[in-house]
Length: 206
Ligand SMILES: C[S@@+](CC[C@H](N)C(=O)[O-])C[C@H]1O[C@@H](n2cnc3c(N)ncnc32)[C@H](O)[C@@H]1O
Image 1 (cartoon, helix red, strand yellow):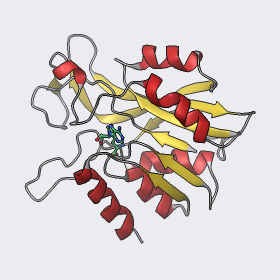
Image 2 (tube, helix red, strand yellow):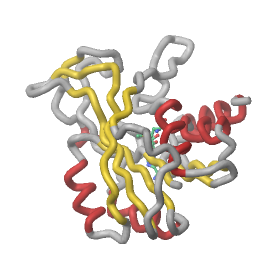
Image 3 (cartoon, helix red, strand yellow):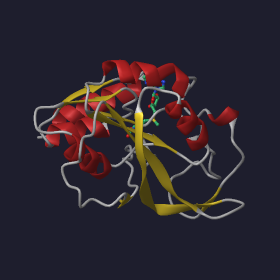
Image 4 (cartoon, protein in one colour):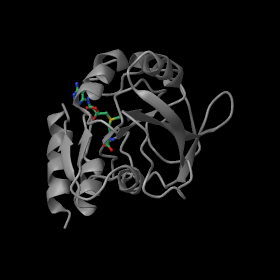
């Protein structure tokens, strides 16, 4: 299985924080918030297809800004589009239209039909958007995803002993889920600082 949360364009928030009720600003720096953030879906999607085993799922997180382009590229790829899941966060961000409170998780398949392990799982996943803080109470990674979210996807689309790949792992929440759920994990992260935190978190999980 592949789970990933790629470095897509985002709209910066007023105070750069992560609590609820903030105002959106226009896209800053062409939406690139990380030091290294210059990849496009066209660069990596064919590579995902190449490394994923047949009859496996691939989950890709994205937001309202990028979803149309992502679906367009996916439509032309070898992947089979299954559906979009919705991650409902507890925080809301205020802009010019409706307040933003969710992200998309695009679910794809390589190969033939494969059912999930718990078909009773809703396609709307409501999980608090809690982020790790450093010793100065500053958010460590602006786009960290909760381990509880990757737990659900991994439990549904893999079995104990399977290998999960997260090519843009940030501070490694997906790896923590894998360790917790007895899956093997391959994670890649270009920023040394995040990579070290991921290694430590995954290593510490008992
Ligand atoms: C949206 S964040 C992922 C956050 C992650 N889900 C977490 O919970 O921490 C995307 C990550 O991709 C990393 N990144 C950007 N370009 C990359 C590349 N070429 N190879 C590997 N990682 C890259 C960024 O440094 C950033 O940490």
